[in-house]
Length: 306
Image (cartoon, rainbow, N blue to C red; front, side, top):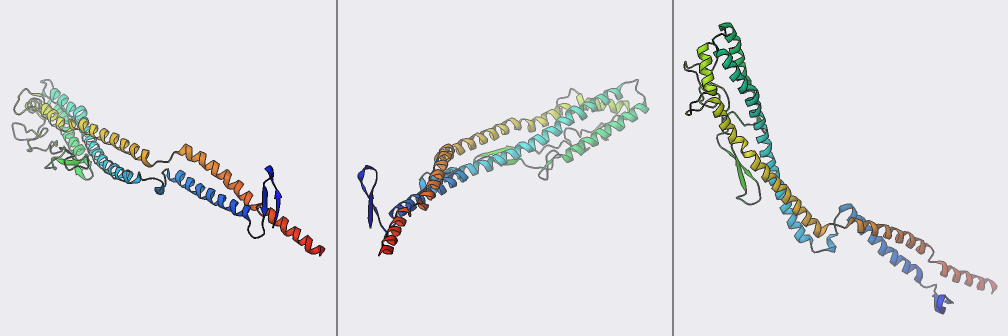
């Protein structure tokens, strides 16, 4: 064993039995390496380590609520999508088809319109009715037709985790123009034939059906508007439910993050510190055998002299 004096006059023991400096360097390097691994894990996951906090119990419960709210929000969004599809189709029927039917009926009911002209107008009239049916047949969501009356009951959406958290949307109205169904666009003419404008009388009857003043049953325009309201009035409420679900989900996520989220700025600073310490620790460990090497060299010199 040998010794020399360091700064301050304290004796520094150099031993060939134990590399004290090396052991200390190894100890600190091991601790820094472990801290570096933990910091890297926190940065990569964005969360604190489960061994570091008891908040994970509460966070796990919040996660269950978040998943439930997300599932309910998806249900609501499906309802919104179905209503959007139905409303877009009804908007086209009202603005393009129903308005044109009224124009044709007015022109065909005019006394100066010839029968040949009425035949052309009637062909367009019937084609529009067919086009309405085609559009209705294409208005589907997840395989369910929304406007042909095939849905005999309203749909109940699960909008939350509670059993009573539901909302009902109704697609039971039939908007087809098929004769004999007694629905908004399937009113029959006096002769029992389908609505048309082949003659002046038919055109006058069609115009009365489309825009007449009778209240019971109402004309087609009013009946269509009333039936359309049953669908479109549901959209704002369901959209509000969707917005509320999104807001609740955000609030729950914020509450969960407050419990377990890692501070990225602090962790980044810690990562830089640990990397520097690891580099300097590795260098110190590599040089920790300097004192022992001196003793061995001195002994070799003494033995050589002997």
